[in-house]
Length: 175
Length: 175
Image (tube, rainbow over the protein chains, first blue to last red):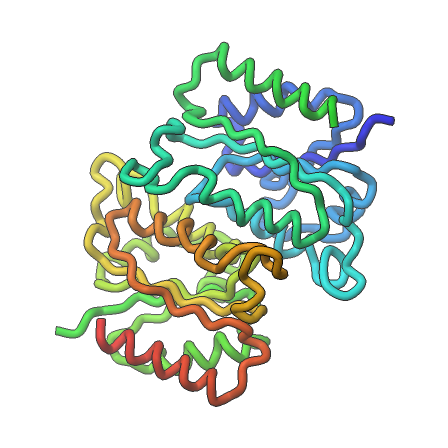
């Protein structure tokens, strides 16, 4: 049986993002993928927690797709963590609703991979910024999949971007 | 000369937070401290970027005070990073407005320090989650001060909380 996927897309400027759009377009047509574009759904950040939780309950895989901003998730995705991953629902006493589901984090960065190391522009290997995301999933009993990280997204040639998008699609089909 | 401090307070439920309030009350009366309670100022997340940038320009020290949520900054503080620390202002070409200012991160967590280690509830030492904050400051040319981290904030006895608050005040007076 094919896994059902809820894809949270958190890009504040979806019109301006070539990479985000190409990646999303590669998977949004898959019949088992439900895309929720958070910034469009909630322009004033008033997340409908029940609707979000319903979508998660109906899915086996949760995708967090967003640009990488200030070494973390865009504000809307973090807000989604805070509101939707509620105590007693996602963690804590009785909070077992997400247990065993899988999380795939898909993110685009502005800088090349080489900027992520000591002494370079971003000072740390990219992996230094992964635990916050991974541990958010693990804390809710979810299974962490190897993330898809597309560096240097603004400058990436069309061919390389298409390859990343194809990989994204393959990964979702295989889950 | 005493340093001028802009204190960004990012707590979505300030009435419910004993620790946040005790810490804030210890410093808010200092004449050189300007408190900006972000969730009160911007209930719909529509940050006034110019007002925020004006406040920063007039200050030598920037304090980020918030609870620690999902291994990072509350959504509002992250939104503030995204909006206020703009390219061409805070970083990138011409983005030198914050250079040399100091940043003090003050945060409260729900779990004891012992929960932050491999195999424990939070899976990583607390320090694993610091680079995202530190690098945000460093990327804007700011100087990173040793953070104040108050663990187990809900359970902390009044005396220990008062001691943390007094340390916070001392730190601001010394900067």
